[in-house]
Figure: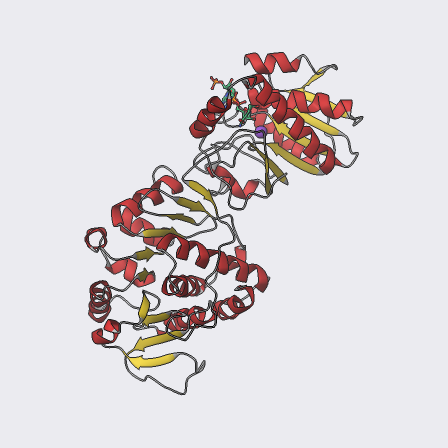
Length: 460
Ligand SMILES: NC(=O)C1=CN([C@@H]2O[C@H](COP(=O)(O)OP(=O)(O)OC[C@H]3O[C@@H](n4cnc5c(N)ncnc54)[C@H](OP(=O)(O)O)[C@@H]3O)[C@@H](O)[C@H]2O)[C@H](O)CC1
Ligand SMILES: [K+]
């Protein structure tokens, strides 16, 4: 059972191609299923810790995995029963169903067991499961002490994060061969519990992967405040949001943060480490600025539009967030040839790029390609995509991030990484990773100020 950080993410079709490519020499579909079944049995045996196991098998190869695992668990001496929704239909499932030496119970009438293993449908699900299957699955998972899904819980579309029927909640999902988009995309991911990979020896390659611990820029003996990363935060009508972004930028490791606002630019405001100056378009032309963050608290008036225009014209690497995403047009972004990272939440994404009609991974990749920037499409399932198609899927860090100001903190953290010299995709990943770690460190009911402060401790 391998933690999924940094692993390749494959769609159902990509997984099928990877399986085909792996079938050379004595590796066949049947031997892959045998490996999958053995790996599942080993994982379930560890998790069940001697408790009785009920394996639910469907008609395809997901069910096939279930039959082999059940036979192996029985061979290991565990109390195991098998219930099926229907007879096996695929050749491989028929072959391995014969390994199960006992009677197969009917799914509708099966009695519950403390450990429930769902091998009804996996990546081959093409429509909602029948009401009979859904009802039995709900009844048996409700009564179980531990719920384990094989590859994917029954009822989940592999590539989109969509839940096609009424899928119950699982405690553990054992991804076979590779992580699939729905292991991270919502709402599916929220039903899976802990997701772990079972390696079945299929080499996987993909331009999409799971968020991983980044290599963060570190200061050394040659460092000074400017080469550590100088970040300009362009403020607007709500300076609380831009102040939060500025604080996060410093806490994420920037050497110098310039907060550019209008009106009362009080030098005595805390934290004193933020350098506060009056906004002028000229201030953005300072050569040492490594990144400009624009959007948190910017407002949407004429002043805000002028500042956005100046930021785009400055030639500095940009983090474009919040209100700036409401003011800018995709065509303007496409015509701008500098480095840029856009950080829309769902509403801002729809405003800029239109409704997501297929899935978040595909839509974010398209948005990155259209805008020419790295897009950080935020949410419980943040997806980061680069114009060249590389993508990073981020499992939910903490539901407590759903509070005002956390987006400003993220924009600041990403700005710090960009100014430190990371390329935009790496800067976005590092910022999202730091933000997630800080959220975990903060526990529950934290506020965005706590989150910004926590960045220092998790910076590593
Ligand atoms: N990752 C790997 O390398 C390996 C994965 N394995 C396992 O194989 C499954 C995928 O197997 P597959 O047979 O393609 O798919 P499923 O078992 O999920 O189900 C397909 C069958 O179910 C039918 N179907 C689909 N949706 C429904 C529905 N709503 N109701 C009833 N029946 C449905 C489908 O037939 P249709 O033509 O009617 O669509 C199929 O008969 C993967 O998840 C892994 O568990 C292998 O072990 C090898 C290695
Ligand atoms: K399943």
